[in-house]
Length: 135
Image (cartoon, rainbow, N blue to C red; front, side):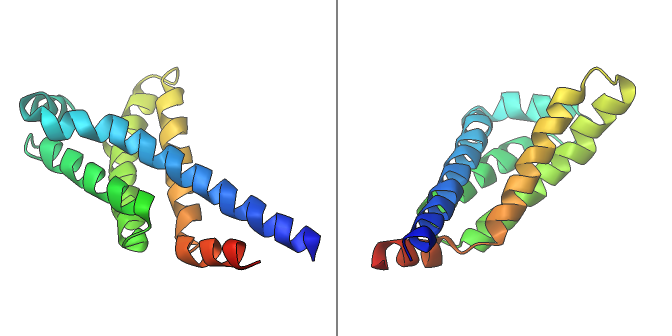
C-alpha cells in the first residue's frame, strides 16, 4: 500500500510539475503577444501569417494557461494550447528546420511541448489531486 501511495504521489507531482512548466512556457511567450499587439502582429506577418493572429494567439495562450494552472476547463485549455503549438510547428519550426537543419532546437522544443500537452490530456488533474489527499 505504501508503494502505491508513493507512486500516486509521484504521478501527481510529476504531472503538476509538467503542467506548471507548460504554463510558464506559454505565459512567457503569450504575455508579450497579448500586451504588445503591434509587435505581435509584425512577428506573425514576418512568419507569413495574418497579423491579427498575433494578439489573438497571445490572448488565447494567456487565458488557456490560467485555466490550466487552476485545473478549470483543463481539457479545452490543453486542446487550445496543443492546437497553438501544432500551428507553430507547422508554420514556423518545421519550415525553418527544412530550410536549415541546424535550426532543429526550436522544432525539438515545440515537439516536446506538444507531447507534454498530449500527456496532460490523458490525466484529469482533479482526480489525481483527490486520490493523493484522501490516502
